[in-house]
Image (cartoon, rainbow, N blue to C red; front, side, top):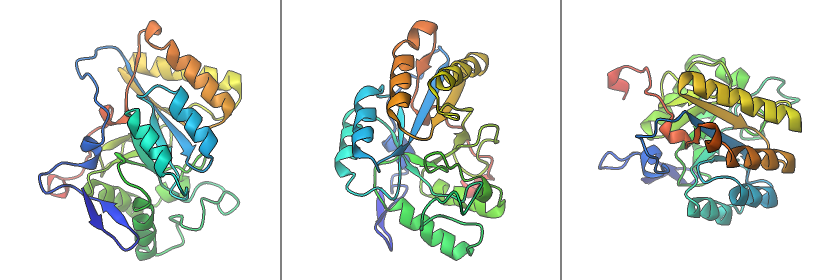
Length: 261
């Protein structure tokens, strides 16, 4: 499931056709008829204490997105995998407000050439292993400018598709990825980050799931308040008739032509 890259091991589709997004997926009962809610928590890896708390307190069906800039995260990843939690790579894509809002010195930027951005993508993909896919957000920065680039944005999705990875678009209201297995989030639950706002957004997320059968939420920055509200909400979710599901169970087929797949 790995190949040698210029910056480290890169995920790939196995010789037997197995893909990382399936091999590393969390098992889920596909006969489940209750509304399914996926939750991706980003901003992980840079603060070990908050990351450990998230792994410990949140349900195992929560999906965790780790920063490519995080160092010494092997133990954190092992703990997440030990609980059966799916992980995503957080891609640093140029956001609204750049350069004041900076996604770091390895970010994919609108002002760089396609070759430079592809090299930066390879660097990010090689930071750690065992993830099901990527999300185009680094914490609260959601890559809006890069996602508006048309061909380059779909080209990024095609790279992920060829490597057997899913893609989560962190922009609520965006269409599902056209060139990758994946979907767009429905609600950003910590924007704004206050306690009452988080509770209200989680209620909105449940409403979307009841209406459509499934919904996906994203929380961009792990904080003590956020973790406390997520844990309380998730602990009573099933009593309200919905079920937490890993992101891999919610993904949709790409719209790419058959030859691209």
